[in-house]
Length: 211
Ligand code: URA
Image (cartoon, rainbow, N blue to C red; front, top):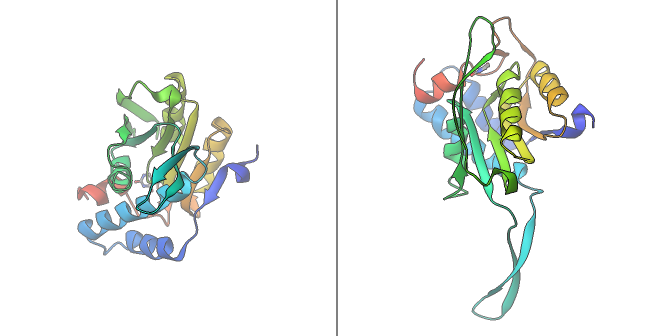
């Protein structure tokens, strides 16, 4: 499987406009949070386009109509803390969805992920898992998160990040070639501190107002 085959760049004028607001350093924390939630909800549609449905009949006021219901449970898994921002947007479309959590922070010297928390629902092996984190930088956290999900039995995993970079995409698709990646933008590069350039800065700090 080639890298290109596993990476979907969701290019849409509304997403591009919202992403521009996110990138703008003068955007307030309140507007940043609102736009990131809405971008995440829009990305969810593309991310789940190919999940399976079962046929179901429903009675309208006039007749029987054929419809669909999701064939497997969906589980949303944010990589804490910035991933929570994407979950906030997605649960509006999927109220009541199960949410697993993976707690990781980046060691600012080694750029390696440090794990501190994991909690998953027991149905992971039967579920379509949606792993989310706004920034795919080195790829280390996402690679570790997917390895953990696989170890817990997950076999259908999709990964969404709002902004990615070539270095992160290369590392992630090499480590997990079976996991499709959905991103709204592939930026130019990673800098020496592990930040995406031009990017938007630290997504967690901007979302939670801890800049
Ligand atoms: N995490 C962020 O929040 N921003 C980056 O640019 C890279 C990692």
